[in-house]
Length: 329
Figure 1 (cartoon, rainbow, N blue to C red):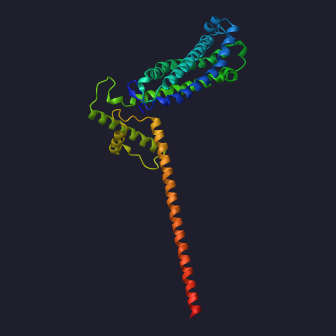
Figure 2: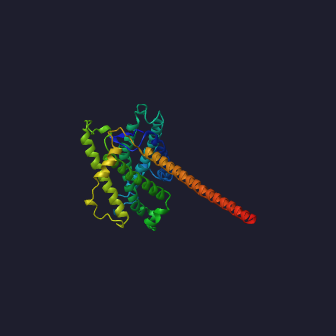
Figure 3: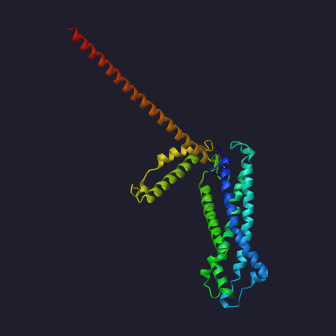
């Protein structure tokens, strides 16, 4: 199936693979909305107890060590409502991607013209906004210790011991953790796209690439991938199977084979679903061969058993004939 081109780079995904991924993202967004409920409840309760401007702009007390403690309610409110808006927008974007990717078939890319633009919006502008919101949340939580240390009703209690008991604290920690995972996965995705090959043998500026340059470039890319894979395997196995001098190894032949198979200037467009289906078909072929081998073995065993029975019957017949001949004699 043809892969989707993002930022003029070939991605490992096709159109039909987007729907299950969007479903997973929507479930994660709903979980984040669930975590937002106690945080928004805390903010609304604090607003009803105090003036909004006083809560945001002025510290609880006039002590010297409480000068910037008002940054916690201000940043925490910005973080909670920004997360709410970004999460709702993300859910709408995922639903839009699911609808667009369900039109036609993966080979009919002309029926899905908005898919690349929607994915690029998700991977770059939306990811930047989510990263800024995440950083704001981290800063807000970092000011929470100072804020609760300045509250008169909590002076006798240590703030680090108090915070885990608050209704908003643990949901905010889990929410920040999930957003941190998204931040890391977004960087990994963009890095993978940056290292991916350009579709149809073209550079990012759209100029045609000569066939020799294209294959030399892809050979070097696959050689680096093989080297990296062997390096990681050696590290994780603690060099039990060798691999300490990988720099002197020659990866040209295997890199040339892989580049010839996977890189054809866009003609051979292999995606993750294609590889998964290929592995399933390979497994079925192996099972078929196993059944055929078992069948042949059973037939051979049956043939040997039948030959043994025939020999036994022939031996019994010759013995009877000898006995009869002896009696007659």
